[in-house]
Length: 400
Image (cartoon, rainbow, N blue to C red):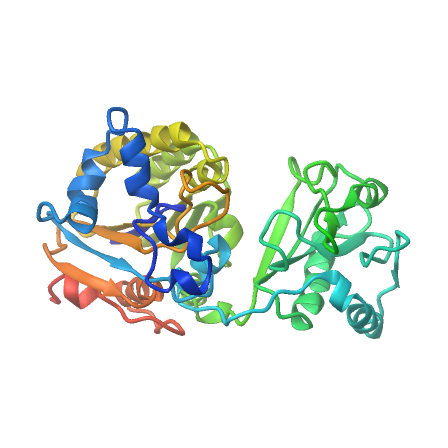
């Protein structure tokens, strides 16, 4: 039974997009792959990825044995969550920057209209306390004004209720994302005690300090203008196709089926190999390697290099064991150049490398949206089309 797999090397961009001046002009020199290679010339050993398309895409060298190309980011900015919504087949709308200091009054009124008890737990702060169980505040980890967080004590409010609260917030704010999450091993008192003003006017919960992460942690991401039901994983779920979401895809893509938000790359790749070999039926695998993005955020070139070497070695061993009917797409979701002088994502083109015995040796060129990948998955399994994207399946395999 055929399988199709997506391996996203999170943040592995191959050069600044041509519209970079509209976003962060100083990032127009970004090139995550090339800059890592320049610094780690001796240590970086990724012959498999280079042969599959990096050499042709970045250096104009060689003809890859299978299909290859690259894609623009159709979403605004450079974001893992939004990037994956796009990859899945639904391009998010352009959002606006919002801080709680500007919206708290209206948000309080809206929540009260939905029968929530809403108070201000800290004098002089725009942070809202809902039902004495959850805090609505600015996200302190993302770019200023991009995300509103709903941080909850699961002993006071169940995860299903936190998601319901998050959906109300989502419906009344046009930020890039609303994230509803929490854990059972913290307390609302401690969460409130961890509220701080990071930048002038930016008030949020210091979530690591609040002990929200860890055992029992659950999270629900809500993008702006995202048509979740018209993305590949949800279309697949509706039609009974088994979809594995492994690594960060378990957190950032909605769907049904086996999921495991493994962060450690070694453990994740071991899990992928194990699940692939055990799966006897028709299935899709959506995998995100998160640690490369973490290395970018940490501006740690050594760590990033080590991870790429590990991924390449895994691919070298995994690809020969693929069944003849199967297809593997390797790509990224944005850039995160660890050499550029800051720890934020960079708006870069992303490589697309397609592997499989039936995949032709062809250059699929520049794709205008990463949604083409989600569309191709639907095409491969004979499912209804995604909201956006153009399948390239007919370009890479011969129709029978």
